Image (cartoon, rainbow, N blue to C red):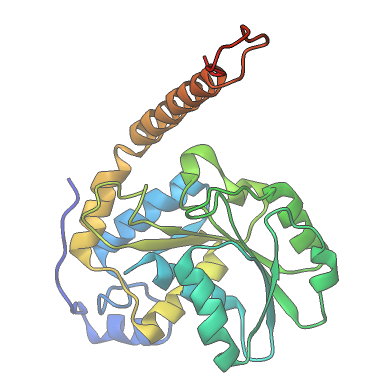
Length: 271
């Protein structure tokens, strides 16, 4: 059973330990915005699910998305992004990034013409697949190959697929982000996010969380851990439900097809 550590602050065992922490030589907990034992449990579990070195849990999906992007971007940089995105991500790029001196160039989910968007200032490729809410798909292998070719930091929103169905880290992506509010937590009772990647990138993301304040509450971390226990089962149920819906839709479409021949004088064209 994971303990919920609700402490906002932590004590050092000695002045020596405090000095080591100040010098960056000690990973001791000091303040929950910097880190917390309950959050660490959630981070290790999600990193393992994604096959990544590290993870950082956040107060919302948008905290994870914005912190991952800002960890890789600065004024004067450009990001190439799929145009179809979760509304919060789209508005971040449309309304906030221009005021920060960050240019956003958009490409369709088919990635057509993305080579033409690259400039010397291009620094990040950001994709989301399946898209929220339209469920459009992006060729993740083509996208990451493009990012590597042009030395772009590759970031993917894996919220809808989950690590059960899609493993971007294994494909070569630098960072993966989730709105953990959705499939990872699974019970619609918390708002949460997470970013995963190698230790170097996650250190930078964590600094963004520390600076901007998007840290997760320990209680939310506990509920996220609870949700992770049933993630595989829930995804399988959702997958089979989708297949049943697809079969029913196909059956309905067959019933609505015009008959090959229609009796003379008949007014019914539909089976």
